[in-house]
Image (cartoon, rainbow, N blue to C red; front, top):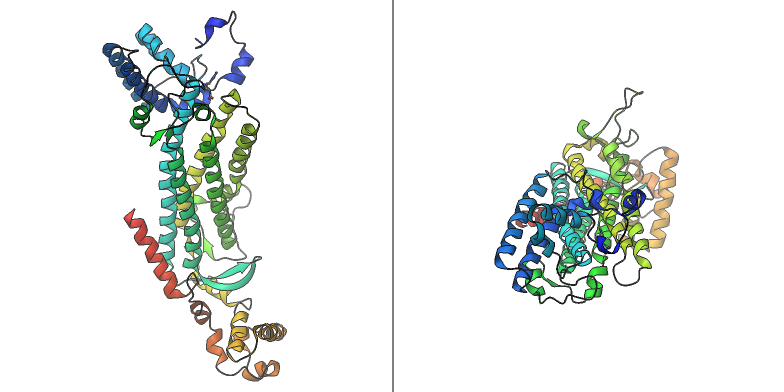
Length: 459
Ligand code: ARG
């Protein structure tokens, strides 16, 4: 039975139900909806709307229903109800009759849905935060497993300067740390309670909104009833946070897909996160990583979709806003899945340290060192850059690495280059000279690694 039948002479058409009903997806908020109703029934008792016995019966039935919702035994699929709010009320009414018909006093589905969805987002944000921390932990673990490994660092996907593999891992740790802090930030802003705002203008029943908010674990009630029922910023922020974090995962996936390619051969992915080809028996494809990258499409799309849905809406509630759910539920699911599979990928990858090192040594990645060496000998950097460039061209023409040129060959380019250039061009020296805060110097990298490990332990 619809909650609003009185004014209508005929029922909804099947097509209208298809476009209007949200139960097929908002059933995921069953537990939150019931919790909200429990707290609302207490508020109604204190406001003198329900007597003690009525409230007791409602609360007992709602608790039982909540248990069923959490055990997954409620049959939403065969229900004619329009949304989760109607479903809960109808189920309660079938059991308690008129007492249940008092529960919606002073309340609207508008403040109800805004409250339910905040609760739903809040609980998912808490577990997504854990998921992000697990990725951080997996990055730190793989970095620790390969503390000495050196990989080429790239700009423009050209070998640029070598870096420790752990430095690469710590770069993604920084990104994930920002994802965590964005979640924490949102958790604070989201934690205000709309319940008691009625349809849009507040309620005439003397409910204690501070108490309602506190009982539902909110920091405070929303301050303006019009805003409370029509605000979906928290969903947009959630979608933005999901998008940004997925973008980070996607960039990591892209790096790893390249490192795993036959051409780079820096690492091997675990069998458990790859798949084969139905035709080519030799193939082992990085599907998990490709899907971490590919799922960004729908997650970014969900953000865009809700922004567009919200942009022209007049105050206060409009049914358009029901469109906030499917995208958010999807983004939360995909983000969760990708964070979890990222952990599995990192836990099962094995780095080919020798091949990484060899690649880091190639590509004239120490040309900057040669320039810096000349700077130390009093040559202005711009000139030094030029000389080093000439040395690279010369070395390429001889088919040699810079460090394989003889002193005589170097001096044919510039006579300031002497025997002492060789230690400067060595791989470890190239890395360790970058000892400014945030650089890829070994000690700094290891220290950063342990600082992050310790922080994670303390959480
Ligand atoms: N199912 C709706 C939603 O998800 C809530 C119901 C509000 N309906 C209404 N007629 N005011 O937004």
